[in-house]
Length: 415
Image (tube, rainbow, N blue to C red; front, side):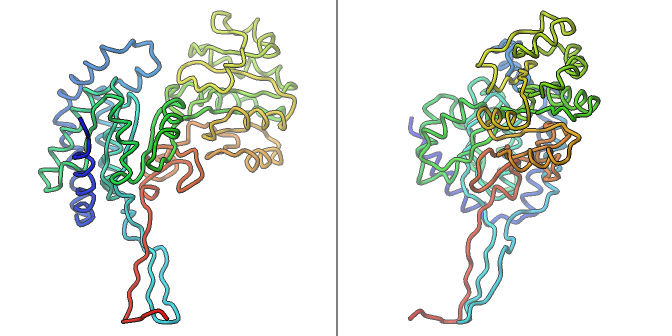
């Protein structure tokens, strides 16, 4: 069945949404938070249906799983979004030309935003709130793994939209089949931009197939380089946090690059990883350094495929390098341009790394786990952009806007 009527209704809703007062939008988002809490049992029942179809050892399972605690946290996040400054109608430029034309460049919504994402039902709430707060209509194409959860969530959201007099077509869930994604990526007359959220395979497929403009987000092949000047205690804490805090998210560490002259400290650095049952894929030098100290059931010789892999689980690769130049070359070859870090006490090397690495977020002596809109003080995010056009890094409300020129005259004509 064609989705033409769905796309048409989304475009119409976009025009209607532009006239809704800001206070109403804030109340709608607060209303969604309240409705979520009242609907917890129904949402969890729907989520259980999805979870029963997935092996709980699958790295995606943690992303799919909703709990009462997680839903309460989502409700708090929604209420926070309702307090954020509106990104709309901000005057970005204001001037008068020699002939008296008054020009203003003003922030406006992107319009109709299509989101293609995997088994992460929390994204449904996040995207709906952020799009509403930035004046955008959203078309949600979630993965089939989370379809029962997404249906329950969107029904909850749409009830609140209707209650406050907004078109329920401001937030719509598309069918779970692949055909719906194909139609969305070709809806050039109705959809303004598509934002894929998921692994590298999903993002690459959307980038290659979509005729609608795409903002790439999500895939994180994350590196941390440990220099020979590193502080061991810092390295130990940073590596453990970056890998284990939440291994299924895009800012989780995938590959450690370690200076050959610092290998003697590697056992100390990775010791906490063993307690978290992290599987290490180490090159020959690192493997032989660890074989008498790290649990052998968690230690394997790395192959080429273990570098340039987004693990999304308690797995990590280790490569030995001779200096920062080799580390930079490895990152340039294998990075997805998401987040990279250096651990070093040599400030000159830190600055070299910060300026040479071509990724959205580059750290010195800190965990890549901080790549997050909330942690950056942006309030919330719709994803991490790994491209350079329009937005880069955490995408918050401001990144969900474009701008237009407003020109006020007094009868001027051009010769």
